[in-house]
Image (cartoon, rainbow, N blue to C red; front, side, top):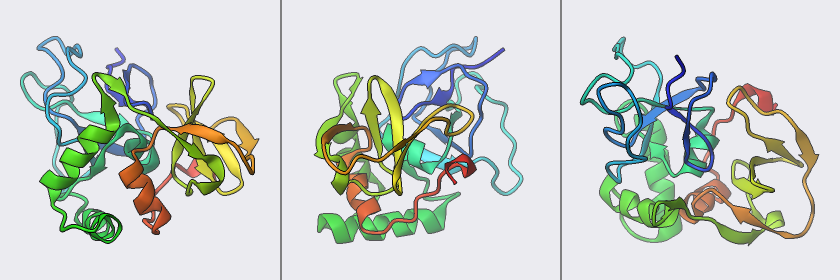
Length: 201
């Protein structure tokens, strides 16, 4: 049975086969029958390694946090997640240092999560915003005709649960709807080394 715990760049939880490269959580989202009953519980949305110190978890264990899976880090960022401070300590420290450089204030998990919560949701819906496509850094996601596309070098790559599929040449002009929160786009522009699925290459 496919579980509804794969995350799209829109932040939606879907039941698809692809597991992806990262795991994460938003709190306890499922019931005892492993059905999703809420899209999020806490504002601490994190993206974790799928393996850490040999730990093993039964996926969607009753009354424990819901294991979510992302195609890659760029997808997790688009959905509004940030690196875990424990299992991805080095990535978290890079993220936090760039956050401070870009946003001009000391950063910790709580302050970053408050800002991300405001940027990723509009009520219960995904918050997007317009931006010039030419100004977006590699690793940002945009929405085109209801689908999610990764900005990557000279191309736009279509998201799927198993990897990137269709490719379009990146237009040199125009305004698009951006899925990745603006605070994270700033970090990507400042040089955060976002990881992407091998199919992007």
